[in-house]
Structure formats: structure tokens, C-alpha cells
Image (cartoon, rainbow, N blue to C red; front, side):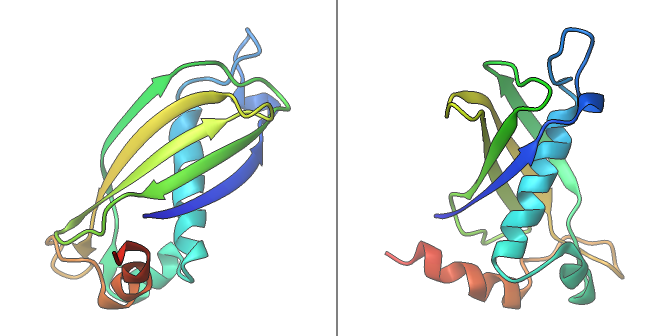
Length: 137
């Protein structure tokens, strides 16, 4: 399993009139977690595109357990629980507050897509080789 954590401070514009983070913003929080997770492996989305691969989101689930509020420092824990062997990759997310209370859990599925043909492809070999060591028994 590969795991990465990212900290983010909730901005005022991300909250509603009840001082609670608007639920739609969790998609962006998950995106930040994924981007930093990939960066932690030495890649960026831009690098993936240079390898001829795009990664569109095809599925997202979230369960909201507790609210986050303005100025909270949240931790986004992002996990890859299995090494992809097909055209898709699943990121699992957990969002915690400063008191380490679990606020939100989510799962986001992306496809690896060839930039030119727009067809599904397997994970780029350079990216897979970085991940493999985390999944060795």
C-alpha cells in the first residue's frame, strides 16, 4: 500500500453560511490529495501527460461524517491500496481535522487514457515501477 498525507487550511470561500465546508469542495480536496500523492512518487499530472497519458475521473464517492469549518487545518490522507493492473486506478481518501477526528472518507476512480487515441491504456511503466516497491510482499 502507498500512502501520502497533505495538509490544507480551509479557506473562508469554501464554507457555507453555516460555517461548514460546502460538500462540493471535497472533490477539490481529494484532487489536492491525489496530486500530492503522485508528486510524492516523483511525478506530476504534467509528467503523466508528457508520457502520453491523461487521467480523467470516472467515479467518485464520499461519505461525510463530521463537518470541517473555516480556518481548520485539515489532513488529507490518500492511499493506493492495490497496484493497478488494468486501465484504472483507485485512490482512497480520508480527511481529518486537527484533533485527528475523521471527517470525510472518499474513493475516486480514474482511467489511464492515451492522449492521442483517447483509448484506455495500462498505467505508464515509469509510474508503475515507482509504485511496485510499495506492494511487494
